[in-house]
Amino acid sequence: MHFVISVFVSICILALVILFTEVFPIWFKVVLALSGSATTGYAIALLIQKIAKETKWYTSPKLMPMFGVASACVLVIVIICTILLKKRRDKKAAAA
Image (tube, rainbow, N blue to C red; front, side, top):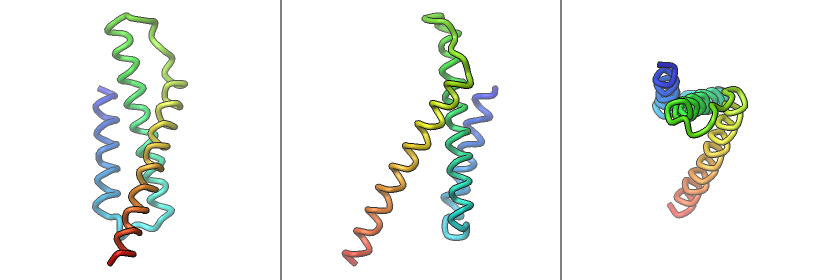
């Protein structure tokens, strides 16, 4: 149930960022990106732990180190996507 709630919160944060991208100041977008990546990382950590418990392939990993690693990975992906989208937008603006 925690996994479903975490995914729902992540989707809500993403929808807020998409819908109100022109209204929010930059610092608030940064806060939303950090909270969204942390929530997504927590959901991924919960999913990995659940799969590990159900399949019994290996002992269940500790949740907090996985949460930190997953959150950092999601944050890096968000930063890379933001940089790529900004370059694409700048390239379109220069061509027009």
